[in-house]
Each structure stands twice: as structure tokens, then as C-alpha cells.
Amino acid sequence: SYNFVINSLDDILITNVTIDVNCSTDCSQVFTVDWNTTGDIILNNSKIEATQYRTVEFEFQANSIILTNSEITAETKSSVCYSNHDVDSDIIINANSLKLANSTVKTESDLTCTDSHTGYTRKAYSDISIESNDFEVRNSSLISQGRNDGVNWENRNVYVNFDIDVINF
Image (cartoon, rainbow, N blue to C red; front, top):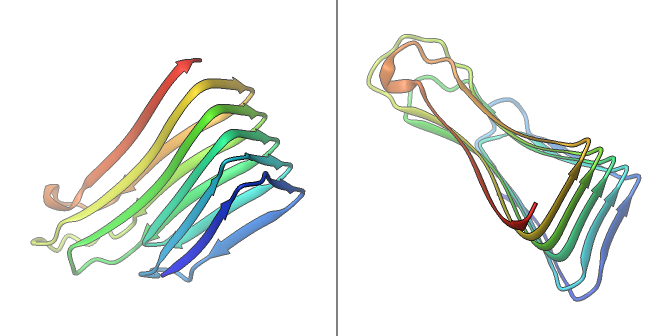
């Protein structure tokens, strides 16, 4: 399990930075980003991405969150066939004010096993949750997708969710 935690009373400013953590194929690890500040989180021309893990959760809490020409991606992937198996990608944003300009927020969960073996349940979860008083989006994308290539009904479960709770959009 890997955790990237920031608790601050000040602004978190990231400019021209790429944080790209990739686990090897079928990694059964958990990667968590938890940034909490009473100030602002500002990403300019930056990318935060975690891929190939079994579980990825990004949680950002701040007074204001501003993404400009930036990307946040939480992606899980597995090709495990012969066991009950879940992959889960989550991005949770909680801010008084959220602004996205020319940016992408994306979750993706993929189960790629195509074996027809029965008796196992495999599930892919992909969620984006946003809570904000003011939410402004310009030339940006919110993407949540899931895929489960299982060939039997009991192992083709995919759950894709958007939970957006804002006052002014």
C-alpha cells in the first residue's frame, strides 16, 4: 500500500510537474493520494496519475481547487481470472470553489480477463465525487469509465458513478 498524504494550512501550488506512478501489470497494491488544506490546491500545466494498481483513491480537500491545463487520472487494471477480484478507481474532490480550465479529471477501472471460467465474481468500480459550492468548467472533461471483459454474467460487473453535489454550476 502506498500513500501520498499532505495536510497543510497553506496553499499547495504545483506548476509544470508530472507525478506518474505506475505499478507493474496485475499489481495488487493500493495507491492513495490524500491532500487536505485550509488554503488552495492549484495545479498549472501538471499531471497526477496512478495506473495499474488494484485500488487507486485520490482525495482533495481545500478552500479552492483550481486546475489549469492539468490532468488527474486514477486508473486500475487487472487481468486476474481465477479468483473473486475487484478493481476500484476513485477521485473525491471537496472544495468551496472548484475551477477546471482546459483540464481532465478521469477515473478508469479495467478487468481484462476473457477466460470463460465460472464461479468467480469480478467487479470494476470507477467513481468521481465532487462537492463544491461553486463549480466552473471551461474546455474540460470529467470522465469515469469501467470495463470488464468477463464472458459470463457472474463476472461482468461494472459500476461507474458520478456524484456531483454543487450549489452554483
